Length: 442
Ligand SMILES: [Zn+2]
Image (tube, rainbow, N blue to C red; front, side, top):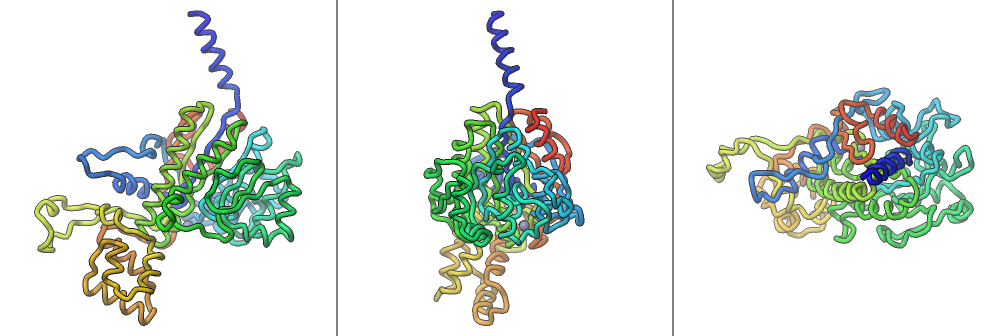
C-alpha cells in the first residue's frame, strides 16, 4: 500500500513539473448565440430533453473582447490580444510600438521553452487570427505578403518560430519571397500542397497549403470528405506534434464569414466542423492528461439572435404550433444544401427559379419572394445572396443585427490540466496572460 501511494505521489509530482502541452482553439466570430444555436440545431427532436454539446461540457466563463480603439474589436486586434496579451487598434497585427519585436507571442514563448508550435486554420495562413501568433510590429491586416515575411524571421536563438502550419494562402508567400520554394528549403521547411490530404504531412517543420488562394470553400459547400476539414487538420496536427510539449492553435475561421453574410445554414455547418475538432481535442486531453485545452472566440459576428414569435395569424399554423408562442425552426436550416453564395450562383444559372430554390432549400417561394429574386436577376439592383438569406432567416426565425461584429462578451471553455485558471469573468488579454503562465510552468 505504502509503495502504491509513494508511486502515485511520485507520478503526480512528475506530472506537475513536466511542461503542459496546450491546444488553443479559436472560433472566429463564435459568440454565445452560435454555441446555443448549434445545440438546438443538433437536437434530433426525439425528446423534450435537449442534449448538451461538447461546448456545454467545458464552459468555465466569459471574456471581454473590446479593442484599444473601439468597444467592438476586429479579428486583428482580438488576435493580438489572444496571442500577445496586449490590446491593439482594430486593423493591426502586432503592436506598432513593438518595432523591434520585444513583445513575445505565445508561439515565441513556447519555442523559448523548447515546445513544438503549430497552427491549423480554415483561412489563409496569413489571415488576421493566425497572423498575430507569428507576425509583429503593427502590420495592416490586409498586408498579407508583409505578414508572410515575418513568419520566416528567426527567434532570438536562431530557431524557426513554428514546426507545423496548415492553411491556405500560398500566394502571399510566393509574393513575399522571390523564390519561395528555395527559401523554404533553406529553412529546412517541407512544403505540402493539395487541400486537405493531411495524412501525407509527415516531416516537420512543414507548411501545408490547403489552397493556393485565400479562401477554402465553406464547409457547407465542400465535397463530403472535406466537410469536417478543421477536425481533420486538428487530428493530424496532434499526431504530428505530440512527441514534445507543444502549443497548437486551431481556428474555425469561417464561422465569422458566414456570420458576416448573415447566413445561418453556413454558420451551423461551420459550427459542426469546429465542434468535431473540439471533440477531437477533448478526447486527446482525456488520453494525454498533461495537456490543457482552451477554447474561445475572438468576438461575436452578425448579432445573431435565435427565434421569433410564432405566426398565429396564419390560418395554416396549427394549434400545437400556436401553443409554442415563440420558436426557432432549426428543421428549415438543416435542409439547406449550400451557402447563400452557392445558392445565388445556381439561381443565376437557373431556368426555373421556383424549382431550383426548392431543390437547394426545400422552401416553396411565395409570389412576393419569387418576384424579388426575379427582379434582382434582371435589374441586378439587389444581391441574390442577400435575398436568399432574408428568406431563410425569416422562415427559420433567425435574426441578425449587423453584417459586422458586435461587442458582446464571448465564452471561455477550458478542459484538462490547469483549466481552473480560466474560470470566471476575464478579459481576452487575460486568456493569453494565463497561457503564457502555463508555458512558463506556473
Ligand atoms: Zn469578422
